[in-house]
Length: 103
Image (cartoon, rainbow, N blue to C red):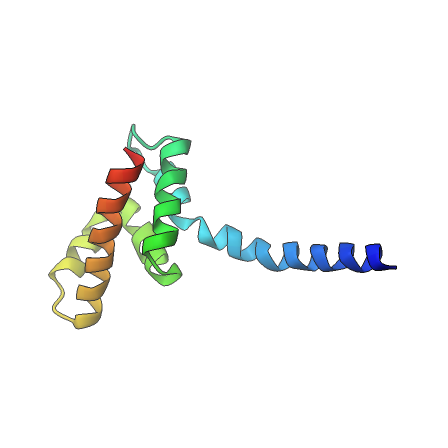
């Protein structure tokens, strides 16, 4: 009985984590889909790990879009709102960390 309960608990935990795991890899997927020659699976995985440390999920969702349309990043950088400035600061920090760790 204990074993059956443990198996059920593990299955519930895995199924509860699956959508989060797929959602959490937005930067990696965007990196791999980019046309950059340096976008290897290992490097994009490393960049995703750094993003998980430096950016919120919401930040990651926004930044992932920039791989396809870098102009969106420029627009945010030029914005004068405190919220956008804070995101840009987190993004710069993320970029510096990714460059140092994943190069």
